[in-house]
Image 1 (cartoon, rainbow, N blue to C red):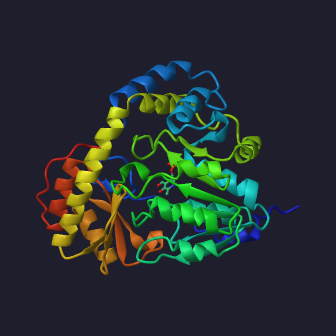
Image 2: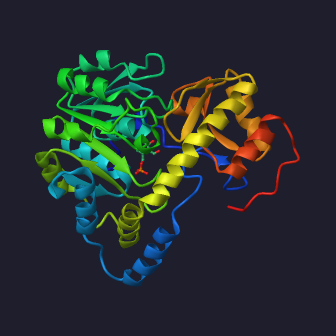
Image 3: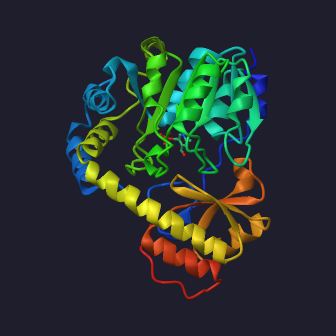
Length: 355
Ligand SMILES: Cc1ncc(COP(=O)(O)O)c(C=O)c1O
């Protein structure tokens, strides 16, 4: 028999990660932490490496009990994954295989789109309105899953808790998944977590340790959902997908919240400075509540290449479904200096740390 991939897979353009610049400080294309993991996380990972010969705890019990206490939910409402991306793929496998339907924004987080198409599902994408989710229109779509990314990637905009609550009441979707990868970075009091809405039985919340905790390289995220959703996903997941180092790092991150607080403080301060730099250079900037800002740039390709030449990589909006924009992750203080010089076209950039 001739081997043939499923024909619908041809629609999928392979995921293209952001490009690195010559230095870590100048690499602003992937919304990674500008500060990195805390010393207590590094110590926990180093200690956990001693247990490398053992399979990890399949359900990450220690981590789940910390998370359950943090969010005030039953540990059985939590599934830990190899990054939240794994959990998005599990949702697709369980609820969309063979023709399921997703409603999400246009643009959406790429993995929400890819995971749906991979299992033969169908997407309805609703264009943003004023750079935010058009929840009113999304609510009218009958779908198995509605994805709401709050704050939204790549714009950084938020919908208020009241808006999400109303959406959860009115949406015709079977399950509303609120992806809160960037929720830690919000300073708008209206933009609270939707974690309390999980109790309605219609809402699930996705979180990641990749952003505020600086663990993108270790791969750990989690889903808080109604019990029956977690029970279903548990049946189909690979049992050892979250490694020993990732589990230890995540537990250490939760036990040392002061590092998280410092990262949030840095991000909120530098986000404003980044916006100011671009505005002074003549660009419009979308108001962001995340660890990146979206710059309206009719000269997208030109700007991307110009900054790259000066040691700064940013993400072209056309690769994120928003041509005519660039997305810039919040940098370290040294990265901010580099960005300032790059925008000014100054080749005499300050000395930088290596990658
Ligand atoms: C909206 C959103 N969700 C999820 C993720 C992925 O998180 P993880 O690293 O946990 O897979 C990202 C990463 O950029 C993201 O932007």
